[in-house]
Image 1: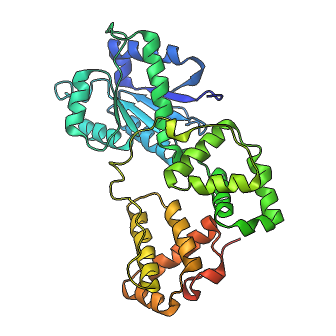
Image 2: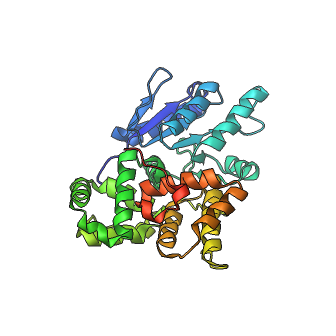
Image 3: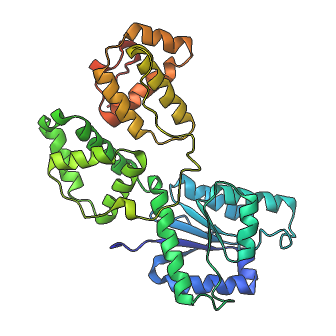
Length: 348
């Protein structure tokens, strides 16, 4: 990678008090070199950090730190350092609750022993757990290899949760590219095309990596490629499929996108809208669904009045109205293709 990642390393008080854990923390900090920024309780969290790694900690501050990173769209890695093991946890039940909360809230968990890994696998589900041994106490891994494994793990977490790295400005540019990929006629809108082109030509390789990973995760990568081809924009070469990420299929087991084809046109439009509303509730990726709905609303010969009646009868009218507003922003869906009663004047 051309850009050096910035890692916030928080050494908890419990880690600092344990000689073995503290030696591990110092070894990791030294190995990360200029990538690391050591965090203390008194620091304001740097919003430009790529990831925060919490070492040990079964206290309220560590738990709050994970929540703070999430609110600032920064992924986190939690290393319990053996503190979570039943025979090591002599603290109060509240401490155990905090540890469980931290494991649930962090994007990945690091186990530093096979014993810890086996225990965590037995008590956790749908959590990305990685074993990297402690080079302080074992000869199975060198200090250099241990730090290299952590650097690769950090990148894997960042790439898996790339949606956290996409700020609103970059997200808007993804939406613009999606719109161009959906509608060839947008090329005639010179001010719009000029604005998009001037912005994306300044993007760094890291920004393109984020955009392409995010688009791939959202199922719109083909639309983005179409847009770039239409704009005649060349980007840094990268094979998104070769980038190592955690498998999201378990967490998104109910998120398979379905093409609804049964019934008449009105039934299909209704079923598509209601399915997107349900998928949004489950936290599924939505952009490919929005793109499919965009094309359906452009091409289907459906009964608007009957559609609205069905939505109201099933208490989905307001949510459908919000969906149309979202699609105006994201896909560029225009007023002429939105049922009149579902249309809202966009905020400028």
